Every structure is written in structure tokens, then in C-alpha cells.
Length: 67
Image (cartoon, rainbow, N blue to C red; front, side, top):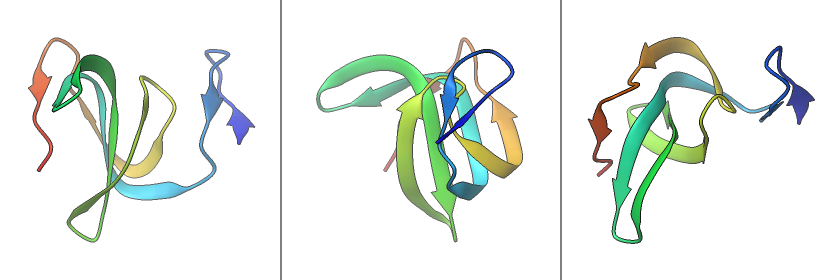
């Protein structure tokens, strides 16, 4: 892990796409966070602002329903 400008920890793993800061809906509930996508598949979840990727989609205020 490495530090981000905003003081949060960032996963060293890079994704092709990161959907950042959306209301991520899972069977366990709803939480604000990031979803990492690699080769067209969901490859990771993290707290908002913690994932890095080649492309970024800002989803603040939007619902993200992975799967």
C-alpha cells in the first residue's frame, strides 16, 4: 500500500478502470466505495479513494451495482 494525497491508503494494485466513490450495493448492504475492474471483470473493492487505475469514473452520488 502507498499513501495518497488525501491521506488515505491506496492499494498498490492497478486496475484498468476504477469506479470511484459510488454507493456500492452488495448483498451485505450499501457503502460508499470504489470498485476496481480488470480485463472486463470486477477485481476488487475498496474504501472511497483507495483504488488506482488507468481510467477513472467518478460515481459520487450514483449507485453502483456490481455483477
